[in-house]
Amino acid sequence: MNYVVFFIKYMTITLVFAAFLYLRLVRPHKLRGKWRIIAGLGCLFVGGASAFALPVSIKLAKTRTLYERAFASDWLPVLYYIMIFLYALVACIVVRDCIWGLLAIVRRVRSRNDTTSLLDKPENAGESEGLTRREFLRRASTITTVGLATAAVPTLAWFGKKTRVVRHIDVPMASVPPELDGLRIVHLSDIHVGHTINAQDVAEIVAETNALNPDLIAITGDIADGYPDLIGSWLDPMRDFKAPLGTWFVTGNHDHMWDGHGWCDVVSKLGIRVLDNAHEIVDVAGTPLAIAGAIDASGDRTDLSWQSDPEKALSGIDPGIFRLMLVHKPVSVDRSFAAGADLVLLGHTHGGQCFPLNLIVNATQKYARGLYRVDGRVAFVSCGTGYWGPPLRVGIPCEIDVLTLRRV
Ligand SMILES: [Fe+2]
Image (cartoon, rainbow, N blue to C red; front, top):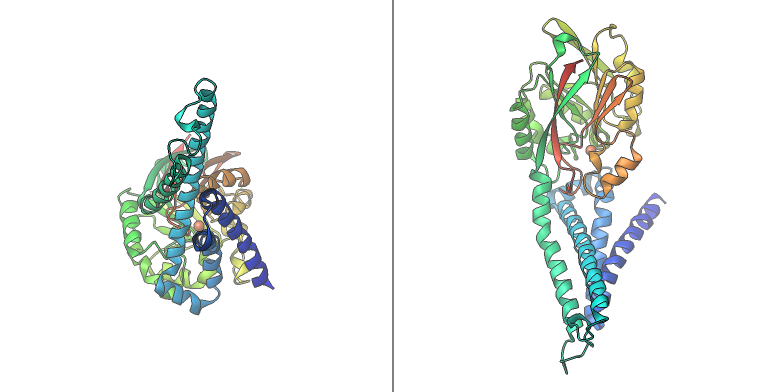
């Protein structure tokens, strides 16, 4: 039954995408016979691949053999690139239609005074046979639209994968002890090592992170998308993280989706400390700093022993000690504040990852991206150091954040 609902849901999305493409790209040309069928199937294929790519990748997490085959054949990344193609195609169609709309307005205005306007000529004016001018322009615009969208795929993918910004954020707080003033935390989140993010990309992230001279490195979940025994070694470059106060990790929903215990083992063996509803006190030039972290809020969906417990993570810390808290999801922020966290770092939202999804995330998430102040406490939401699914980051680039504590 679940699979029936799954199929109906994503087939509906497929048909919406396909209908849009058909209506805007195929129907105006009044194709006949086999060309009409081929064009229609093309729309259905692009819509279907885009609609099913991400949900299928999640389903595959539960059907390991299929996933391994998909991973080996790399057809999942192909679906991701088709998603980018659809994104670019819709954008190009919208731009084209806006241009057509403007031209129609210009034509209407000009036709009042000039009935022989180029755009207002009768369809067959000056052409006794072959293409009419209007049909010629239609075909040219369709070919241009599809061509531009195709060319945009590698460009968008390159920017999505390789454009990573470093954001420097000062965090002024009254609760920062004088000795912690100037402490630099490099915050990474949602790296999503997997189909299109590999060991080479991880090595680049590690090098960029070390170049920022962090005192402490915090990784707030979704470190990978895949089984740890298949791609765990891709995290090996993380063994080279350099920070005097250590590198710390909490799980995200994707880590649990594949193998929460497995990913924690992989990370631990790299010298990264896992905070599973726990805290540790580190010494910063004689001043204690509490670093706490909670299991992801959805951890218990795959294993009942993985209950998120921010209260437990923050319990037993002496008053007066600054409390840095790591979680994955926004839903854990208020619980962490209530349990005494001074500064909460998190991710999960990806900031929406690309326009216009960022608008939806901003409208629906209390903690969507960036810095939030709540009664003297602070939460910071990373937009993600990697991406989920297609390497598509329009308007919301991947980021590495450097948070500097400031005493006020
Ligand atoms: Fe994520």
